[in-house]
Image (cartoon, rainbow over all chains, first blue to last red; front, side):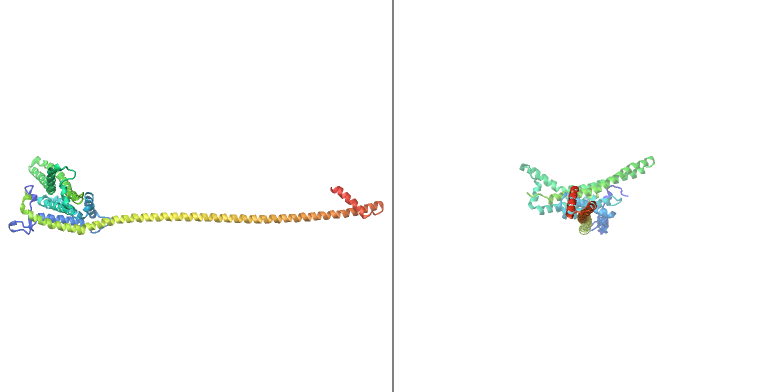
Length: 252
Length: 164
């Protein structure tokens, strides 16, 4: 049994470990395992679930089609026809984060998205990719993003730095939001679960009070499932909004 | 905090790259085209079925219209035949009637003519019979036979007085 609420986030080497348990570039850890499991779950749903290609879908196929339609509508409504070619990436992003978050809800599992390095890597990929798309599509016009139309010239020294900072902070806010939500949720669950054990351990009539944090943990677990989905949705929709700016920039 | 252990960064990034690349390729090349195919296929099938239903409905309506037109034509034809027959029969009847009437008129005329002839014959015979009778009566009463001319004149006079 872990003693600290943060022990659940420890990265442990499983295979390809260096000498003395030192991690190497290709070391297969519990984090790697849950990344593989997230991909496996996504493939199970989207490839195995669609194997029959039925006109009238079964249970798994319905879920697969629902996920597809959900993200496809998100891209269509927020980005428009220009976003069609980026749909597979946004879908992969959404399903990966969703599966990682959901697998993290299994007791004793590992939450891939609770590590800032993972969410930051995903957010940076989105940020750099979208910035590149914006520059390629709009050329020098891209930089007018930092000086919104209609702003008086004397405000430029204030507006431009603000816009640049707000643009550059996107990957940070995107990655921190997901990571912090996962981290805080799982830590809280662990803390309240610890209360259950320690209150029962007090013995006598006090043991019965262990029911209170247990109720709390149950309610929080339901909330965490909601957050697990919501954060995957938020990550995907923010990517859509940033992408929409890049591909639908108006040329004057 | 395990999240800040920089030694874990590199293996996490490496495995994130590997797993996410595999996921992206599988989604972009296998899963999503397959879902799109099924979803689009269903939409097309629905559209096709609706079109088929609309086509069948149009065909049914056309068949009904054709049937009603044929019915109206048949009815008109039947009425024409009935009218024609009626006209023909009444024309025949009229012809027969006219023919019969003509025959009757002719017969009536012939009968009238023969009656008139018989009457005149009877009248002319009456004159000679009356003359004979008158001559006989005169001969018996007077003993002398009157001349034929006188008898005939007297009969004519008597007949004229009565016949008038």
